[in-house]
Amino acid sequence: MSRKNVILAGLIGAGIQASRTPALHEHEGDAQGLRYLYRLIDLDQLQLDTHALPDLLLAAERMNYTGLNITFPCKQAIIPLLDELSPEARGIGAVNTVVLKDGKRVGHNTDCLGFAEGFRRGLKDAARERVVQMGAGGAGAAVAHALLSEGVQRLSIFDVDSDRAEHLANNLNEHFGFGRAVAGQDLPSAMNQADGLVNTTPMGMAKLPGMPVPVELLRKELWVAEIVYFPLETELLRNARTIGCRTLDGGNMAVFQAVKAFELFSGVVPDAQRMLAHFQSMNG
Image (cartoon, rainbow, N blue to C red; front, side, top):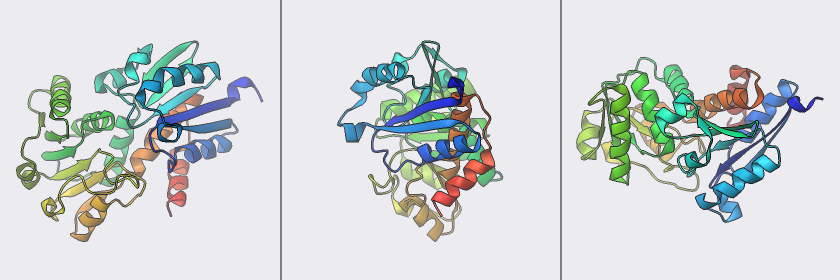
């Protein structure tokens, strides 16, 4: 087997032991005849934080890693450490995939494409005049770009850090036109006027249980989308389904961002349907 058929990849993030990403990549690698190894680099287990990113990147280069996926809380902290950014990553201001090649670190963002693909599949005819988004971090930036690209007219962004929400709204308005995004002020009022709600915060993950909005703000006319996929049915989705909302779980985004990352790492176009079926079999 030639050296170019050997892929060594990893995921850097905090609290990622439940991630399905290694299995998704390795299973598809097997199907493509590649020797594909995918490792978890869990900051929580290693008792590290984002200050360790320079050392981790250097170690990955020294050990001939092909590339790295980057997740919470590193998607923005990684940017100053990279040599180049793809147009998507630069526009979004967040990176979830780093290709290590020819001595260079090139950052990409496959989250935006991943969410857009899931949204088109799961909520293609949903009303999108006004949407509330919880979270303005790295994943939130990618999802917001996807939502506006998919025709959302006005996006209200709420974050525990109001400056971060303001910064993201300004960035989006530069790209998509004035007034398309606002930093939300009054959540009950915004929810009352919204067609849909998207959670891009880690709230709802197995290690961060709970809901990003009070349950009494949900109503059956809303559609509700989630990017957390472990568990696949978060408390938010369970409550939304109970009252009759249309919902979109985080599975599609998880799969379709991995589809593109696989291609960036290996140079091989993976079988997206096979990866989706494998993901569903792991969550069956």
